[in-house]
Length: 211
Length: 295
Image 1 (cartoon, each protein chain N blue to C red):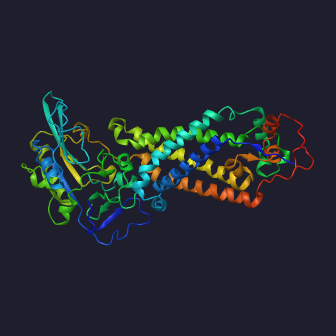
Image 2 (image 1 turned 90 degrees about the horizontal axis):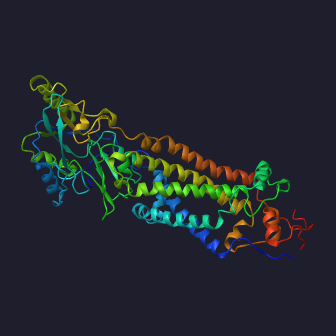
Image 3 (image 1 turned 180 degrees about the vertical axis):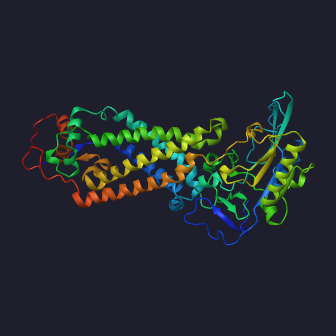
């Protein structure tokens, strides 16, 4: 007899998918610009020139979305003592031996690291992206900024791609129930107890809950 | 300007080798600009606009004879004027015709991600193909001479074509045609190099320019435009002509090792999570039978 627990509000879900789709667009078009062997990806979204036109705008959408996430989530994303204890036992998490893990709050340390990777990633991508967008506005005497923009944009993009691969894998394949929670917003009490016990206890207000 | 009949040596943003590269050998073409006999008349600027179909537009005054601070998307040929004080205190007005240098190793082409947007013909001309250009501006970062310029209206990059359309028909570039003093020459790289060296020697031996020489920078593999300078040790004095132009190391790193590192990291990431799934599988939440939250 379990009653579902609300994990993500409608606002959080809508925002997550705005961010997700905007990121996906920037990823597909960005990979097209990254390598000639992936330039065909630009054809899928209307051709190179169209991809180039929309890439920075969707980047701005992604930025706005991530900044909004920061506004609503940054308190939840601070590292706690529970996270430190959890991190020491991370090998159990990787091996799916979750019974050996200390309890964590609404987000575990991995999720927090993903959030901060994307948050600082987008700040770097935004700053360097504006430089690439208006590259001719950077005077010739400051051309090192043009080069810096290229290096930072590529480096930050690669870091977010690494984080993104892990995020998608864990959200869809590895942690069952995670994907439905970001679509419909709800998780089962068992799910909450298994993965985010401290959060479960907080939202149910009962440390020794029986259902 | 698309010149599809010309043979190709290099193509930008192309997966694999350029089709047809090396099939036919051609003479390397070269423009020689003798700055010591240029009078700054700007006939070449006008001829360039005329031939390429651009109208003259407002000039930007900067307390010199120079038409505007730098070349524009529709102004590919610009004489740079610089007042230069020599060691003996006398003044010189340096005039250098600035345009695309048609590098043997073009930084624009190395940086370009769009398939076929920048090509290098087998005669050495580096040309933009606007129908393939995506307007990203990477060539701006790749060029060591600050030449490619963006057209805001069409979202395409433009620069001097070395009149590839004329050269293809056996004509000399429009600027060469218009020069009244003969300070501009056009021919094979070999011939132009010889002519330039002869002129530089003349300047050294008969005109008291002991540092006169030929500007053909090795850092970009030599250029398809070479200069005779009164003082080849100080090219910067000629409107900021770089003394040792190279493709920026960031661009080289980005298009070289970083591409490999990035690709391996991305493929490694995908393989890594796949392997994890095959080895450990998903995390399942068992029904809570004992009520303590643990399966």
